[in-house]
Image 1 (tube, one colour):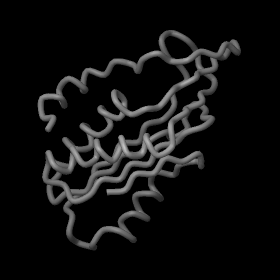
Image 2 (cartoon, rainbow, N blue to C red):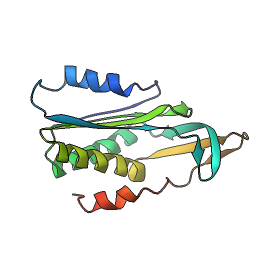
Image 3 (spheres, rainbow, N blue to C red):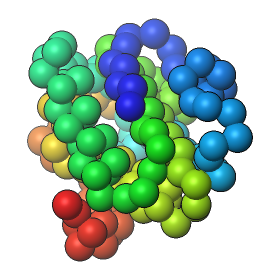
Image 4 (cartoon, one colour):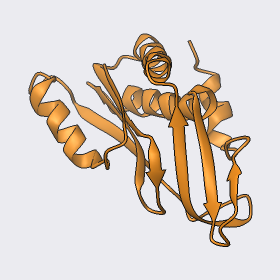
Length: 156
């Protein structure tokens, strides 16, 4: 398992390739399921032009590692990679990568869904959005996702 929180621009496909080349044993996994979350240009009915994502270094990584371990304990997966951006972002920027390797696709899909859903609910990040009108505001809650309730049923 590898968890990275960084300010640098995220290239999710290079991250997956690098992880496969340096960490995983070639030929042992049957597939990789990945999710790339990008910044939207809207939220709660407002047009958004920028966002700053803040966190507590050390605590945030530990929290994400716990969620990844829950996924590894709950499904038959070989490895989990999470790379999450912090700092200033703009619409279409990749914010988060979750990648899960497994011998079979079902476990990889389920574990990936679990990690991203719980990152949205439990990871200690704080969002400050800037609207196109220049108004700054802290986001009090994440957007609802109907998939979250489904993945809770499988939770460890």
